[in-house]
Image (cartoon, one colour):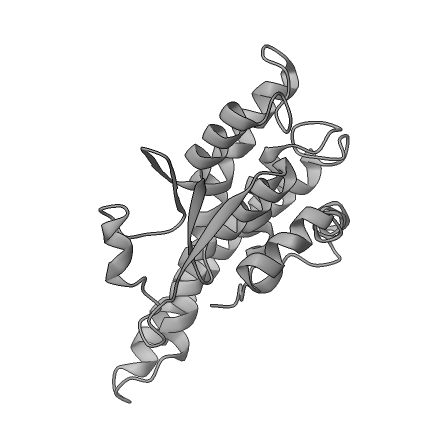
Length: 223
């Protein structure tokens, strides 16, 4: 039995969605973040030394990292589903977007979340204007331009195809959902980017996506 070690408000929601798309049986073992620090509990380290999510166990195998988990599940249990045929242009795009999601798209979004918290967190009055000034400068000169550039790039990539790897829905779209949902919540993705907005509407309408939310619980992308 596949066990998803599911941390609330984490990337493991994508794993639940993939399992629902593949129609696989699985167990959800839940972990809760510390409400003050938002860090994962120490009990997750008993599953994987880094104590982070997502991580799954499947028999003797323990697999961490979203991309690695997706590749493992699709290759082991997909029977050709949710992945383009080897050697095709679509397969090359599939691999690219599978890695782009965490390697390129997520870092500036995470940085924005951190610097937003710097601006809003309580601190001594004599430090506050300096800290907020630095955070504002970093956001305006580096973080936001990177986010906007990436969103424009992704919007253009969907001009000619319905999904990221091509005209068929694949696991690459599941992987790409997380940074795009985060961008819609806190990164400037709105109706000015109609292709990306339509992408999010399509995935939200998928029955497997909705079942995964029922199993894993809602995700607050503002945190």
